[in-house]
Length: 83
Image 1 (cartoon, one colour):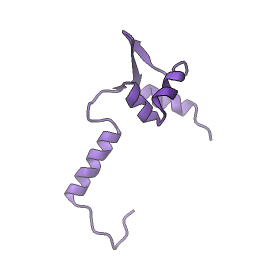
Image 2 (tube, rainbow, N blue to C red):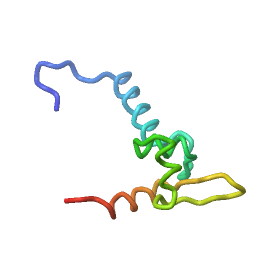
Image 3 (cartoon, rainbow, N blue to C red):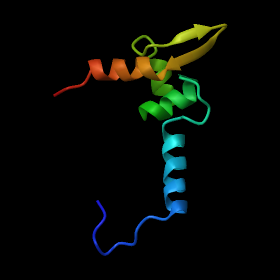
Image 4 (cartoon, rainbow, N blue to C red):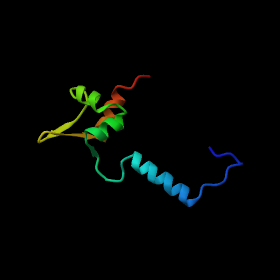
């Protein structure tokens, strides 16, 4: 929350923030599917960990290539959430 002593955000500040959020949320490419490297980054794990735990992580395999759905990953993480 901004204090009363901070300068208001400029349009360039807001544009930079919007661009950073879009990149973080992967809105730039418009695809709900991620490759292995993108998924590892999304889950904040190593690619090695991800490959070792494929039997647990929801994914699709097409012609030897792995694809991961953000929606399925979010649901999978929510199922394993601890209170």
